[in-house]
Image (cartoon, rainbow, N blue to C red):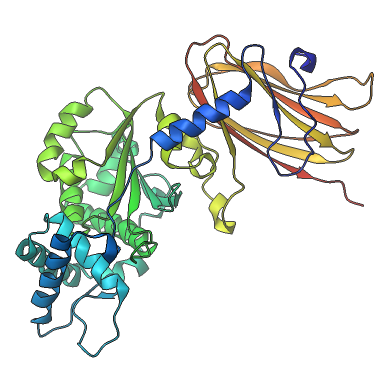
Length: 423
């Protein structure tokens, strides 16, 4: 593939800024970028406010009534480290009203019901020793990063919790974790531990980040075997973590999900069910990118993020674009110096297209080097493209993404790093 088949834009310097892409034969990539932005805006959602000035008078009255009820309790009540009925002479804690509003909303602002729910939650936390669970080693280290784990945050700053139970289709694994009542209890405690990590990442302040995002992978999930555990987890979380989930995204949803949903639906409030988002197989990346930036989506879900990548702080942002059916797009990274090393990552949701890379020297008459031979990337590709190239002479890197064999629009993301030659 020769870069002369694409119209050449003005040169883009080889820095960490996104390169200027060359338009393909049918439509420029800039139009695709605009389409992606419009798609993400359309997918935005609005959470309930915890700012007093934004609350209707009826909600403020209910909040005051709940405070008054709690003030009659002789013992101090604290949940997630937030005092809910502090002494009258104690300084005000802005987190208190946030937590109280969560219980009120979970009970549609029925004050006595919210009060009863809060007391049951406090009693459960004391009996379960929930405040101590974060420091416990429950023997499930091998499940972290696979079955349930916190990873990154969404576009609005919500921490994201991923859940995937497909490993339990293996009978030995299932028996090891759920083989008897004691093992099931330990697993539930471990699952609470993951949830507590998510809550600890919240600000619980008016105008702050006050809920998490949950992504649940239903691929290979043994529905019948996990019914008891699933019902216990749902019931436990709904009773003791009110309004802690801003959005629940189900991915790799199989055909029988409607049957499964009918079983768990009685355990869910209408408010909870209104937060659900469904993504079938082949549409996972496109759905997740609406809420989570690609560099924070795990690689197994079509993103660019690997397990240990977030340990050193936020990752380098990726540039997002869409490729329409029938399009071929070229990404050009220009201004690369001799001796510089360029590393790039690229992912396309659903793949099923052709990808290649070549290096074009800046000198007239220079020979174009094939860095990655054009090849078909299957839909089941498990990893994003990740490659590096050290230039022997100045020039540009050209990545080609050919979707001309498909009618389906696809979301994509890429990023690159340039390490300049040492003196």
